[in-house]
Image (cartoon, rainbow, N blue to C red; front, side, top):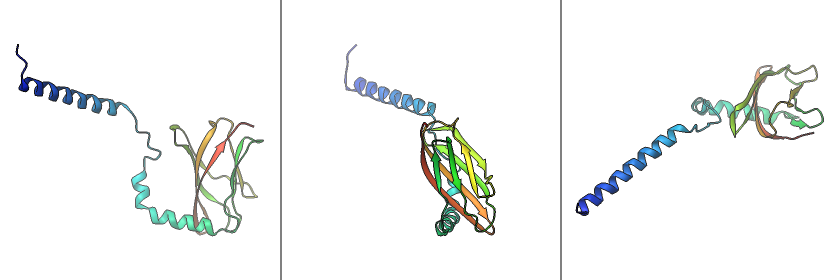
Length: 149
């Protein structure tokens, strides 16, 4: 069999097509691991979220969020002006969707809420707090690092 230009071009294109098919197959096997599945809905309500963030920024004491290593808990101190807070808290890690936590706000009489962190993986966590107190809505997001005691 004689090797000519036509045969060489056919071999190169065949290898290229097989490589592209392999790349497509490999990319379909991996999960992109989006942090949020509802990112389109968030984009549609962007201004609402910005208004809630501004309301939270205007609070006198804000919403302090910290990790208490001694208690192994995330501590949120809601301001008591405006009434009892109602809403939800989302805790998530960028590295995995398996560790995501969603909780309803259950503050005590002093406006404090403790989230036990004993079973949570150590490392960087993103916290989103979306709450309503009285007639105003608020939103705060913050990152914290969970460590060992």
